[in-house]
Image 1 (cartoon, rainbow, N blue to C red):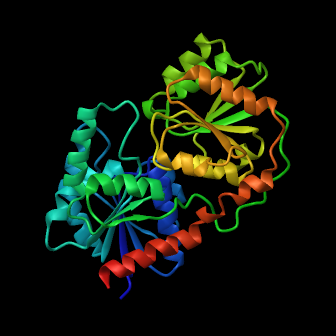
Image 2 (cartoon, rainbow, N blue to C red; image 1 turned 60 degrees about the vertical axis):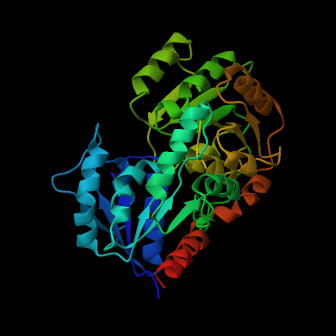
Length: 361
C-alpha cells in the first residue's frame, strides 16, 4: 500500500529553514506521483511563491497569524483542516509545529503522523534542569506519533536516547536539487555569506562582532535574510563602524548566485538542526566556518578541507577562523561539491516516501 495522499502541517510560509525544506519536499513528492496538501494557519510569507501549482493549500478560516497563543488556536483548527484534506499521512516538518499536533496525535480517527526534528535535542547553554524539562515535553509531544525523523545519524542517536523508542529514522537533509549547477572557479574576493532569519538563535550579532575584529580589513559580509532582529543588527553595523562592509539585501529564494561570488560561508548560531546553508555552500564549492551548533555540523565538516568548527558565543574564535580561511589558498571547489552529493532532493524524497509507505502498508 502506498501513501498516495500526504498532508504537511505549516503555520505559514515564513522563510524558515524547516518551512523551505517542507515546501521543496512537497513539490518533489508531487512530481513523484503523490497527492500533497499543505495545511496552514495562513498563506502569508515569502515561501508561498515556491509552492508549485499542483500542490493543494488548505488554510484556516479566519486565518491564524503568528502571535502569542496562536499555536493553541491552530491546534484547535487542525482536526478540521485534516478532515478537509483526508490524508493517509500527516507530515510535521519541525519542532515549532510539535505543540500544534500533540493533542491531535491522541485521537483514534487520525492519519499516521511523522514528525521531523528540525533542531538538536540538546542545546548549547541549556541548564541540566531546563534540558530535563525539554526532554520530558518532547516525549509527551511525540510519544504517540508513528515515526520521528532526524537529519543525521548523530541527531538520530541523540533523539533515541531521549525518546526511548526505536522509531527515530535518519534521513539526510534534502538541501540540493538533483542537478545542481557545477561549481565555478574560486573567487579571490574576501566576500563572506551568511543566511537565515534575523532571530536570536542565529547570533548574527556575534558574527558582526567578529567582523569588527577581522585582520582582513577588506572582507565584506553579505547577510541574507530578514526578520524581527533587522533594526538591532542595522544599529550594530553602524555602532561597530561596519557601514560599507556589511550588506543586508533581504530574503532570497535561492542563495546559489550569492555563493558563487563568495569566498566563505559562516554559521554563527547557538543551535541548529542540520543547517541547509552549509550544504548549499559546500555544493557551490565554498568552505564553511561554523559554531559547534549541532552534532550534525561535526559530521558535515569532519574533513578540515571543508571547513572549521569553533566554540559557540566566541567572537574572537570566530574572527580568527574567518581570517585563517580568507588568508589561505582558495579551495578546490569541485572537491567540496562532491562531499554533499548525498543531499540531493530526488533520492531523499524517495526515502521519505518509502518510510511513509511502510507506515500505512
